[in-house]
Image 1 (cartoon, rainbow, N blue to C red):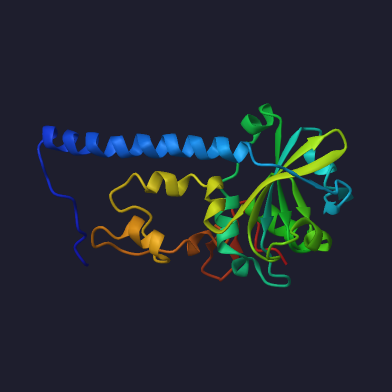
Image 2 (cartoon, helix red, strand yellow):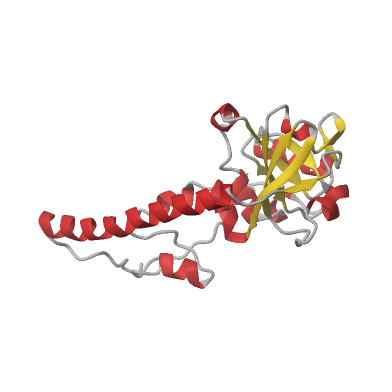
Length: 243
């Protein structure tokens, strides 16, 4: 087994001095993040059609309905590979969605969170149930060209909306690494000596490769399942792989 690299061993005072120096940068980073968040809130907004159709567990609904009476809505546009089995669905979308669990806190701030899947409702809802997820789930398949106008359909997106009466406005959206806003695992791993431990782009390599270490992907999150000796796949919910 390859010996893993480790930081230099020092005494407590040296360690604390190095940490104090880093803390200055961390606090500056936090303050800059606060300033960016404030600038985000000052962005102009764009009116969109609140009557845009979606499919939910009770059938046809609208974008306005997805607010569930709250003033704001955060919608994650889940990539979908129609007709493919659970292990072949989007790993990244599964990874971030699996970390969205307790919603009562954002509900208390008048915000609804929902998944807008880019595939058929019946098929994708089986995946949601297989994973044991409980967040509101809709298919936006028939409305993607409207909801994601100017953006790449079929890619992950995180979009924020505001409701004023029956009018709906888009206030912010992001994609790619921007959807890490849904993540807590990477934030915790970034505090550890070996970081995220995965290959990938330059930013990830910079955040990861400091010492010799094993490299991982988030393949394990492709369906957070267990494969039995007989080859049957069991999801987080305990269900076997959806048909």
